[in-house]
Amino acid sequence: MTFVHAFPRCLLFLASSYMVCLIAKGGLAFDLGPLHVQSEKVIIPGMLVWLLALLVSIKSGGKAPRESAPAQQELHPPMRVTPVRILVVVAGSASLAWLAVARGFDHPLHCDDFSLIRHALSASWKDLHAGLLTTIWGFPGSGFLRPVPDLSWFLSVRLLPVSPHWLYLENYSIHVLTSCIVGLAAARLGRSGATGLFALFLFAVFGAHVEPPMWLVCRYDLMATLFSVLAIWLFTLSLESNRPWFTVGSTLSLLAALLSKESSLAMPFALATVAVARGHEPSLLRRVGRAWSPLCALLLVLAFRLWTRGGLGGYTVWPDIEPVKLILLPLTPLAPLTWPINVAMIRDLWWGARVVVGVGLALIPYLAVHHLRTAPRRTAILPYACLLWATVPVFSVLSLSHTLDQSRYLYLPASMFSIVVACLLDFLPPRRATLLCSLIVACHFALLRMNSEPRVIAGHVQSLVYSQMPPVVKALRKGETVCVLGLPEAFRGAPLFAGGNLGKALEFAHGVPHERLYDGGLDGREVPPTIDRTFRWNSPDTLVDETRRP
Image: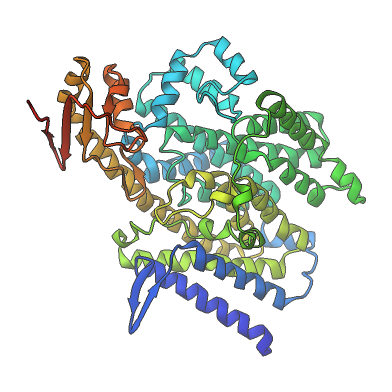
């Protein structure tokens, strides 16, 4: 091995060891002997690791040999699918996801949740129809076009009890269903059913799923991901069977995804990439032509947006992105997806578990290097290309905070990343692949429980604050203007009382108007000069009336 080949591998080992130290030491700043190590975010050293992994893959060179059918069958024998096995797999993934996120279901509703439920309860069928042509009925004046989740909200509050636990259970059910479809799509994009099993369990307990199952407003992300992955699965079936109903189902699923959230606007190009990589036509032009249905669906939705919104809508911060970040676009999503860590909570994890998690996550770049060296190029690049397309619409918000705030934007990319990681194990012996699969899933399960802990604590804090609010409710019912001071805005990334959450919660629970309640100006409104009653919340369980009587 020459120096040119050995030097990048040494750098990759050092960078991976640095990431393991970051996790094992429990934070972005720590002392390592005489050295003081500090990093701004996990995403920065994480991108360095993947950059070096790409360099090692390029320096390794060599075209991967074509895999033969006997070799593939010998390495991954076909799995026997029975209804009992399907039931066991679904129940196992649902149980793991429940153990990881169910504790966060005690978190009370938050800010936008109250607005969504209030609009869903007051809306009529005419409002839904008018919202398609003018603006979304849940957010007046918004350029977003999300009628599919809006319809689900409209039906949910009328068919099921309007309670936090029922609404959280709906989000959880959508998450489990999405995990199953991710497994089906991975089995089609990978080499065997084992690939689908790994992707299913990994996505079910992915470490970055802090917000989607545990925040009602994230139903938009849940449904956009559900229909996007369903479109990919049906589209792969249509390429192999040439049956028209698979093409129709894929197109309808893609339309539902495009009408769920703007984060799925690039998924038609992911389906076009699948057509190019998996099409059986000898001509490249004919394989591209197989993607006519998703591209037509995209043009239809964009034309509808231009007609009803006067523009494309959605996220409009792309022009503010620095050119360097655009150059690093192919590597940017890999860092927060490979290391989904709430740095404010990592020290609460046992040090031995931190070491295992660090080593388990650091193995993923090495698996990528091995995959790129051994797998056929088209097979190796296809899942990653789908991940890249899923990342493009939300690229500007991928640089998350150290507490995984706004991790809901990672939900759709995480589905593609789970397929990518599952495909990395395709070219390993079955026993080794099973061992690494178990290790990576266990690491993400531990991370998801750790990352969701702030929401559990925040839920207890909110319940405690609400129990002290009878004097505030009484004053509001008398028509007085009330100001409540000392409320915490967030706890380690979990929202508490930012954005006027207290007033909307009291209005939802007791019917008092939230316009006369001010929480120290945290909701963006200026506190009027004349306040009838002033309260201060002194943790943990004391509400003091500070009103100055004349």
